[in-house]
Image (cartoon, rainbow, N blue to C red; front, side, top):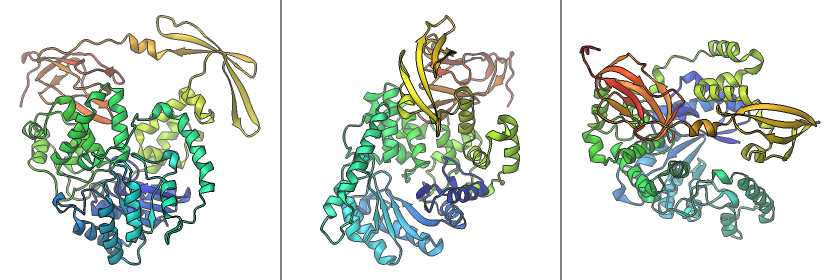
Length: 550
């Protein structure tokens, strides 16, 4: 088994203390991971080295991955030329001692010509090092690129079973196997054995149709916007959820602009999130790249953008974009981080965390993996535990039942454990009361259960907010959910002080005060859903009420 390791970011979006990365790799190896494909979203060597060392010390086979961007076949593409990747490969093989090399082409930018040039040069320079090529088929050229890579000396190329292939996924396995059949590179894979697997995954995919992004074809403009495969479908799906389908071409254009604003960086988690957050921000605020730079000191940038410019995920190739970085940091009174961000973090106290978690959730519900999960994803872990508290262990539910609510009269056969099954029938759903409460009646193995539930659609339907108007009323810059509240009524604030944190389309934006004064009214709570321009906070600017001192 293999996995991706985001260097110093482990499997998260941020830098972790070194002992967390090492402990994760040790647990992953114990749990059955053999190959660790280690990359860094900025190809930052110090972050890469930590991941390589952690995976190696855990006893794993370490594959050093180069995050590919640009086009080595096009000399006009700037800093990401052949020399750049050859130097990076030398660092991975000669200085870090990785067991194999990978080209991680997360957006599908690797053309057949570029594949031949890059893989051929790597094979010549590192004749004894296995070479692995990973791409996405966004433009529709993935199979051709992987054939070119194989011909140039690649040992492994990534593909996907036909039912899950194409577009932003990997190239078709069936197509590649068929094209190589009878040649010197015949894979030896029996196509008759592939068919049942493909049928299985076709059926699985049908269960998840509600979560399809809606993408119906390839997109050759990926060579311009360079959006990674996984992020492309996420952004498309989210834009449709927010009613921004007509803005999708603009989002792609703004993504390319945002990348240039940030200095033309490799784009893969978490750096791709930074570019995506800035692109969506530019669309929502109707900004171009020149306006972003001109207004950098006053714009309420997404938190991920500020963190990137501060240096919290590492140093990008060629350094940070100036004067954007200086403007953003100085306006917020932030210091830049020099060197590897995680190097200055104290060790995570696993023993103390285990004690706190067991006190909160109970000793029998917390094990070593839970403590590690909390170290990596504290908010997600807490949300999961709260979900379990309300709904129990939903892993026992069949996928179709979890995704599709039962209707009156429906029955389901559920296996709780080997030899123990229950038959659940939904008998009735009572009309909702004014407070949104309904009584739902089930039969469980013939015994009637009466369950009170809150109908969230009724609660949400009654939640109507007025729009902000005037300089003293702070409105939401875009639709989203309030995930943090920094002030309460009566607090004194200065212009630019943080008032609340908004989460929208996987990005968090800090909402600043538009004027100095006293907080007169707070119209939101944590967890509230808001629309663009909804009133969040009202500020009274009278100085005699709240003197503002410098």
